[in-house]
Amino acid sequence: MAWSPDKTEVKSWNEWDTLRHVIVGRADDCHIPPEEPALEAKVPEDSDMRGQWGRRPQETIDRANELLDNFADQLRKRGVRVDRPTSIDHSQPATTPDFHTDSQFGCMPPRDVLLTVGHEILEATMSYRCRWFEYLNYRPLMQQYWDEDPNFRHEAAPKPRLTDADYHPDYLSDKIGVEKRLQWTAEKFFVTTEEEPLFDAADVLRFGRDLVVQHGFTTNLKGIEWLRRHFPDHRVHTVNFPGDPYPIHIDATFTPLRPGLILNNPQRRLPEEQRGMFERNGWEILDAAQPAHNTPPPLCYSSTWLSMNVLVLDPKTVCVEKSEVYQAEQMDKLGMEVVEVDLRDAYAFGGGLHCCTADVYRDGDCEDYFP
Ligand code: DAV
Image 1 (cartoon, protein in one colour):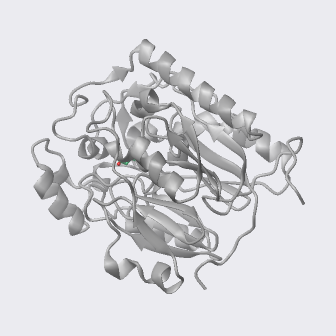
Image 2: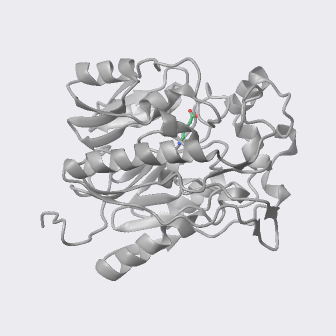
């Protein structure tokens, strides 16, 4: 049955079929959280964020909200239904029997927390203490979908304990240096241990029957095994990208645009031995265009490669950040219509156009692209 704006239905099997209903995050009350093991490993040695924490400056919150509101309006004008989360108070400390953190993170980006697979939305375990309660920002929407769609499966992965046993102490110095980090990621020695299953939703890409999951700082092998057991009708593939000294989240590294075509970050190429399933099935893996910027904006966790963190609206249409002119040009040459979205001043809140959204409904069914 065709999608109707008057009826809520949760369904999305991949990253590219026509988008009908989406969640766009909010910058409200976002914090730079205090130091904690997993977060320290992600912040580059020379970052302006080292040693800082607290509520983000109000003018940056207002500006990011303005851009996110505009993006939501742009999507609505194209006929996409857009829902927004309800921010909790992120200044509240979080304490469990196992850990304490003096503040939380924010209501951004939803892609990190919510994994939509078919009729299910799964709340990820997360791997940062400051993000343990982040799912609460989305619970009003989850409850609404639950009430309105009788086929919606609302699931939550087991909450991790996040004791010190979850993190390798070797990683917790600010003087490691990029060379050492690159060696460690090539050896698949990451900040998180295999104490218990850990994953962020943004480490997962959906290709119909196949899920491609990045092993890195935010997702460990037990997390991937948990996903494999949780989705028994899917094939779950583990990938890693040795060129990334701070590997969190797959969506500035590997970007499927349509069946048969993926952009890959040229500094973080998928290793040869992991390309088999794509090559055997005639998929092309292209190097993404260079970012337009040499540095990320101030107080930003992410790299300049948010250039390739695009949101595909359908196999011929893609949202690209407005200043990312090289990425837009490449999309144009690939035959895609480019929708320009001004978002760079919101990057610091956790990412780009893919990050700041989470799928609720896309057309299409669960197909097997890698038979
Ligand atoms: O390149 O810093 C950002 C991904 C955010 N979801 C990077 C990864």
